[in-house]
Image 1 (tube, each protein chain N blue to C red):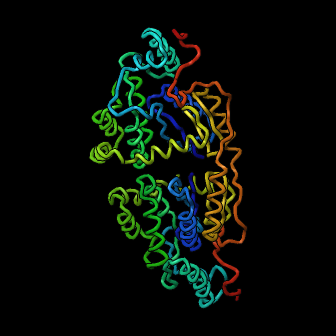
Image 2: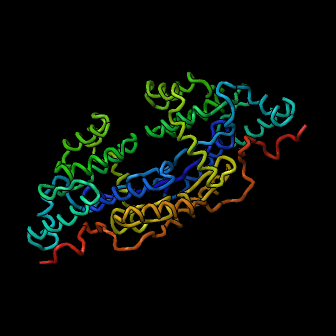
Image 3: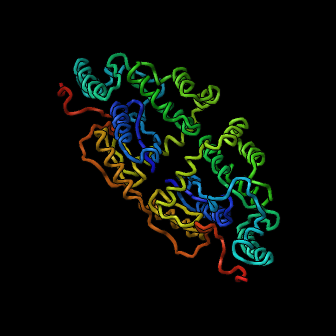
Length: 240
Length: 240
């Protein structure tokens, strides 16, 4: 079974939802048969690269609130994170374009290190107040995740590298009806929106597991090698 | 959209079916949004490693036919292959355990080289009469496919490496109802059995594309960051 999770590094409910999903997955009997894939989603896709600002200032501006009220919004999210055992700092964190980190996550996927990089990026952004918005910081994260430094550097330097993969994920999110993140899709059959409780994820996994069957397309009689290893076709020579 | 193809290197209809699928895919408007994944299936899972015999002898024994009749069976398959523009030699090809090549295909998947290795392995087995059954031959194929020689060597030397991945694929094939290969699964929703005509694959891709929607699990109201980038929750401070 495959679970695809659309999320953004800048999305606190994605950070929290990932932890809740992982708790739900740990309680699922067939957890070893579940493959998890990160999919790209930018909360602020029009933001220019290099346009980085403190999160609290961005929130105050976006919602027309005072800095103190914006701080309270962050504290509310932080209390949810801490309830999941996650560190969350509410001062000093920045907001910016996440396009480059998504490109890097696609490189990491191709090299089998995607979950490592994703966890490091979330931790850097929410727990450590480390930047995930400049090339130097991203390169350091890539190396920590086990990627080759030269290869990661080349991807960061070439703005077209994996750019189509990021956009394809985003297009697919829209086609699948995701209107926010985190958005979890189980075997392309069931969708779970938001950072739901762990128990809900376990239930969704169980439901998807039971519901696995495919609709046949095309007639029978096409040439197959069957489960006994027989690749015979009726047209071939008759039995001796 | 994702297409998973269960197949075996030893399966001629898989070799031919892959070419027909790729023709069908090339005619599909959204071909650039299709990800193709190879899944493991062994036609002869009980075969001991090192138990290698000429295919024609194996066919004669399996079906109780003369060597000439077995040769005619191979010729029939070969004519289908050639109709797809594929080379196919009917003499000198061997039959054996494909467990190691499947393990190597999982390494190649993790390194983003799976399709390269799969094409090379099919070509070696069906068109070039090169072995795909001994470690030296497999290492050469791995290197041709762009894998790191030391890493491929380590996987070949460790019989447990990626063994669980091969078995998980095979278990999943059984759970999805595959009773032969090639078996194509589109977005875990539609199944196509056998080396169907290219047009059938195009139709199946179109059907799966139109049918993409997920069933929601869990209530609304879970915490999300929406497509406008808003991560607010009702509990957070009221607007100023």
